[in-house]
Length: 534
Image 1 (cartoon, rainbow, N blue to C red):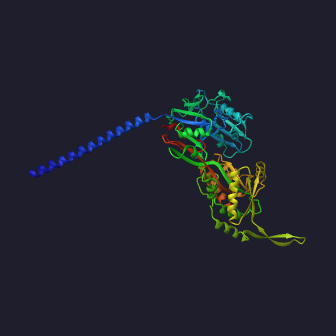
Image 2 (image 1 turned 90 degrees about the vertical axis):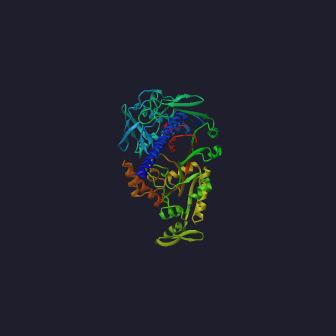
Image 3 (image 1 turned 135 degrees about the vertical axis):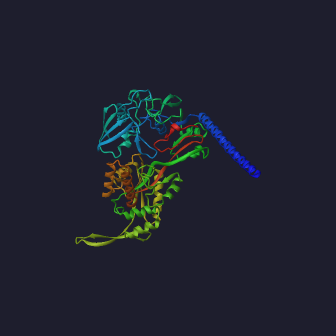
């Protein structure tokens, strides 16, 4: 009995120790959690709620007339468009809450009723009409003028409803509504007009100071502008601005400068690189005697090593490209619309088409009629093509020479045609070329009219493609659009009316001390700016 008593006492003692240990651990964890929470709150309070930006070669803060890319990007903090773009370039409501396409050329746009200007006055449809009138004025030189070039009439139906009439159909016209809207009552070319954005100008002297806009419509609707202040320093040159970033006087720079590291070094900052707007490609004249053959176009495409071009001509400062819309747009997510480099397959394409390799080149026999009796005669035809390039662009000439060398190694003879600027554009307009090296600045508008529309660069026509192009103009179903664009990319790859070559790099570099979510694209660097701090 005595042994059992001590046994029970021992068990109770052990249980007591365990209970105490559990209590002690939990108490310590709670104290630790409380201390961490206090520390986190102290760190949160200690964060610097302001950032420093820079503008090189400052011109004006007027959003409708500035031609400075730094200014245009920063102005998105102060001025809002009717339609904004997401990080994957999808159109989303901003000052316009909805839009409807009544006919091919008429749009009805409903405006936000709770938006106010930075001086507290109400935003109305008259402000939008006024902004479009300014952009269309011959006296205005603006990058946004092209957004409204097809607008022929703007009618204010009421304070928050607009009717816009176009001179012709513009596919995905809502993407053109991304220009900044200004306050009509305070507008002048010399002063800074009112805006509806998250921030407003507090000072504009040797530097510009932005404070939170207390009248911003999004305040109190799930968005807390924790970033209190934005200081914008003005610099005489890009080199001066880059040096300011290097020594820590600027927190963020967005640029397509491929020599940036020469100015700011390689350490002490974070960087995000993305594919830029500048897209370079070959346009094949599909009505040409040789290039009307898909096999010949494929052979040329298979014979060109894009990586070789990017490394030897650009020292890897750009991206190889396979399709115009592969820069990250929501409507096209497939990143492989090119058959790639395959010299053996290139030869096979020509052999299957009836070409044979003789005397260091590709030849084929063709029958021709001659004489009054229409007698048939067989002649030999050599594969030889002209490549059009703008002679004033030394980089494009270097790319053309690289391509000519690569094709020569495959037995395909290409003659370089270096044209003056005027001749180059005249030849493009009249389709007077075999192959042309072309570059376009892509728009967020996902339209492929340049490549597949009427009178396209390649003279390319196919009934199925025409029907797809009609469908994408007349549907808002996102699944249908994605499916149609996938099919268009397959025609691009399999029919090869064009061959995408490369796209430039766009970089956003920012201080290692920056906190918050940075998700830039080339439309703006300031997504989630309200969460930033240092």
